[in-house]
Amino acid sequence: MDKDYKDILYRDPPKSRKRPKMAIKDRAAQFAPFSAVVGHEAAAHETARLTEVRRDLDESEKAIINSQLQELEADMPTPYGVYVTFFCKDEKKEGGAYISGRFILKRIDPYKGVLVTVSGEEIPIVDISSISYPVD
Image (cartoon, rainbow, N blue to C red; front, side, top):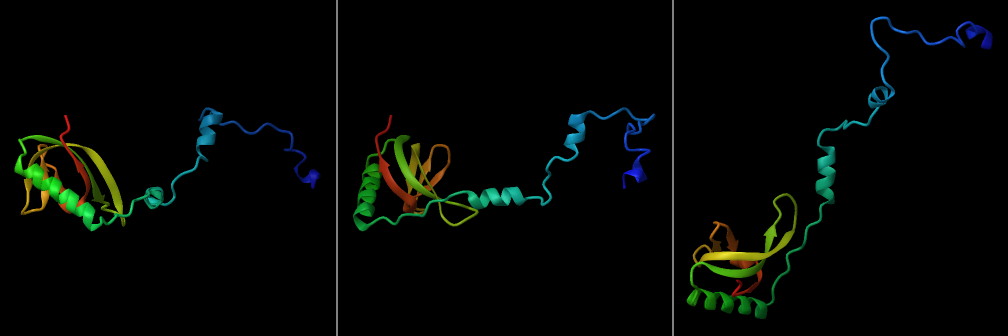
């Protein structure tokens, strides 16, 4: 078998007269991994993302939140700072996340069942798991 290729075995590879020799890092880039399936990585990331299960409040916890909201509504100066923890449903998958933060309330809308913030955000009262005030 060696005798078949003996004449070219130890020769230098041919050089192009039209194109310069490609750098080794550029040659390696030709074989770099690529995304054969568009969107696969995003779908895998979305599947791996964790969500929380909404916890149902017992009757005593609901009563506490309800009485706090009634007190707040009765003597609430506008705007009023409160610290609220509420459940926010995930739009893409089952479950969601609990969000806690300081919010400046503009008003409580009992007809829509929401707390309306100064920034215009509406927090559904049924999703509230805890509320505390006053917050400076």
